[in-house]
Structure formats: C-alpha cells, structure tokens
Length: 297
Image (cartoon, rainbow, N blue to C red):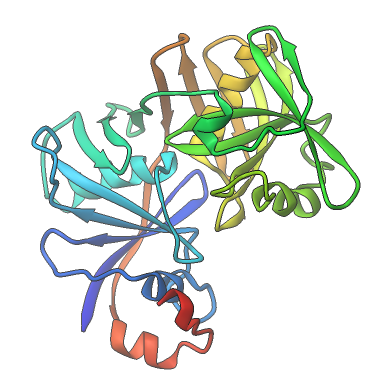
C-alpha cells in the first residue's frame, strides 16, 4: 500500500500532508504515530489529512493527528499548509477556501505576498470550554481576563489564562522565554489531571504592546518550533489581560506570526512552505516500526 505525501512546514511547525481525496487513506493512530516518528518514519509534529467534506458549505475536510496518534480539533500552522497544499496539488483554485474541521468551518485565504491568512473561528474562555476542573481552585480577575492558579507536581504553580480556539490552551506570562522552564513544567501542565482532555501549555514573554515571544508545549506533540493556535491564544490572553493591543506580532523559534483580534473575529497570518514530496509503503512502515502500541492501533 503506497501513499503519496508532502512534507510541509509553517514557521517550523512541520507536517506530513496526505491527499485523501485522490487516494484511499485509512489513517489509524498507529499509522499516524509511525509516519510522525523522526527516526523510523517521515517525521513530523502532526499528520494532516485532506478529505472530501461532509458539510455542504465546505470545500474540503481537514483532519489533524498529533505525533502520538491522537486526533485534535485544530492546528493553525497546519491550516495554512492545508491551503498551500490544496492549491499546489490543484485540488481547487478557490481562494478563499472553506475547510471543515471537527468543531465547525474555518475560512482560509492565500495572500498576494505568499502568506496564508486564517479565520480561526470562535474564541471561548470558560473553564468548561477547555474541560478544566476548577473545584477548590482560586481565581483572580485581571482586566477582562480570569487567572487560575494551578499547582504542579514539582511544587511550583502557574497563573494561567484559559483560551479555547477549537482546541484548549493554558497561557502564562514569563519574564524570559529563553529561560522559562518549558521542558520541566510544560508536560506537567499539558497532562495535569484538572484538564480532562489535556491542554496546550503556552509561555508568553511580552516585549511591547504589539509584540510577544512565545514557546508552546503542545498536547500530544511536546514543544514545537511554533504553534498557530497557541500564538492566537497567547495574543488573545495578553489583550484580555490588558498587556497587548491588536495586531500582535508573535516571535516563535520557527518564525513570526501576526494575530489580529477585535474581541470577536480572530485572524492569523503567516508562512506555509513545501519541503519535499515522496511516497511511502505503509505496510512496510508498520512491519518495521518497533514502537508498536496495540492499545492505540
């Protein structure tokens, strides 16, 4: 079973993109994990699958699988690569495009300068929106935001803003992203038992009212070079805290993203690049993959 694939990246967040429109794709968690493995597969932060839509107003269905095989709601950097892939593969000439994701529809536009702008959909802030258990926790109001103090297993705590952009985010402000304990506290926040479906942990440094630096420990992927929905969540959290004004330039290790938010409409703009194309024998990949986990196949 031979699959065609395209390797892409958006601000260093890298993807294996699969065309499920012109070839049959049965993407199980086990196959997603093997494809994403950087030693035994192609290697990627996420696997993106383009399919025919079920929604009558959508041009395509767009699905995202993390490196651990779990399917997630949204990926902003992946959405930009999705548009570039659809146009480069001549699946559609429409611009803008409407894509069906598991939480609804998003609109995406390829701009004249080669970047891609994404209407990121609805933004929500209640604990239930990110499946966060607040029982027994203290909260503090800050401008238009609510900060929750989250105790961690290592004895530290984090004051987090909760932001849902289809997928869940917990954003904290740090003095310096270079020295922030992302590797230590990121996984403790991501898998904290108060988050029923885990969470993306953002570490934001405010440079000025229109500029931040950001690192994100992503749910199911670990720290990545950039996280599109994480950039949106950080910018929105900073605006709600009274620290930022729109538009916000977000500096990540992989590149820059621009976030615009007027309190309702949320838009992200950034690059999307094809790295290479190829083919892979899925049967051989699974046969030779040593890190099998039958509980997730």
